[in-house]
Length: 393
Ligand SMILES: NC(=O)c1ccc[n+]([C@@H]2O[C@H](COP(=O)([O-])OP(=O)(O)OC[C@H]3O[C@@H](n4cnc5c(N)ncnc54)[C@H](O)[C@@H]3O)[C@@H](O)[C@H]2O)c1
Image (cartoon, rainbow, N blue to C red; front, side, top):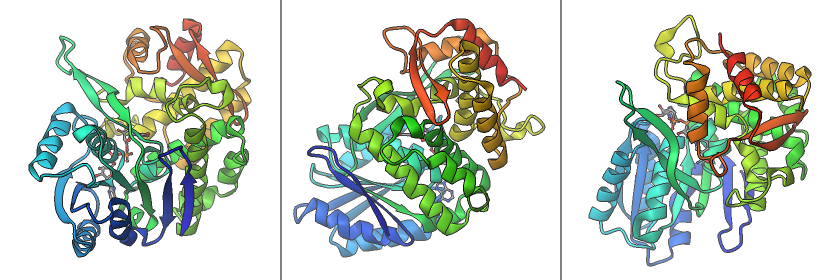
């Protein structure tokens, strides 16, 4: 078992990574809640094999919790105000009090929604994040970002989904990443999780603090990563969580300048990625449209490629950075080009509506060297368009 401390003043917590670590959730929930906690509201991802949620329920009950389980079948459409409302009604109906924990057992969608229920119900109750996808382990479960998407009618058939437009920072009391639970995760979601690891590699030198070699380590261990070798994956999760924890501890609320290593750096690839993630009909494989829509990690992979090409167009870095990124993404099996992108102006418009705009002007994270990125406010639109066009298949 590896433990990584997220030392935030007054909100310190641990990320526990290891095989079988889910068996510790109930005991730790009791320790966190003390004797007053009597209920646990568990939000379970329907993709997680039921024996994990059954054991969790039994162990919570043996610790004296009355357990209420709410199920979610994740998608970006389901990450909505309606699901949030349903969860609020369910938690309120149980008589859940401010000392009782919410427990999220699932991928990033479940973690974000359950986290926001915990952030807002009775102005905040404790949440324990139990991530069950690689992406949720290395990224979504750590750092306290919670929320849901907003679906906005646009006069056309398909309304536009704006990602994570509603939310709050609410740090978990504990994160438990049980590597065993990844056994059932399908190959496409494994690859999608690896996209966030590559993102961490692309910023590792800017973060510093001992994380500088993350990209080199991933390149050296690519075989074990691709074959999902258990001990390599545990090490990968630990290294990525450690980097994310460093960033979060330096800038909990994404407030400081990314040049100083702030949390905004973690948005590398995301302003481009969010703009295309929810476009219906985009497939990671041009020869198989049935794979549409893109998964979050696939959109991030494409977004990182677009950001790199923009950076080259703006003269911030040379093409060797693009090449290295595309090589590692392709080796993992992530897309670097996508067919059927709408007009560039539409994507630009979506990017402008992303939360990461500053005072109405665009803000992007662009690479400036190997493992180094920087924040760029109001970039030249031509260079952003060049980035978008670079990922057209
Ligand atoms: N809060 C943050 O800081 C943060 C960071 C990154 C991403 N996110 C969010 O995370 C979401 C993406 O998360 P995700 O990639 O985990 O996707 P997801 O939550 O949609 O889960 C992916 C799929 O895997 C299934 N699944 C989950 N665990 C499983 C398991 N152990 N075995 C088999 N199937 C399993 C789910 O049912 C789902 O079908 C996006 O909404 C994104 O915005 C949040």
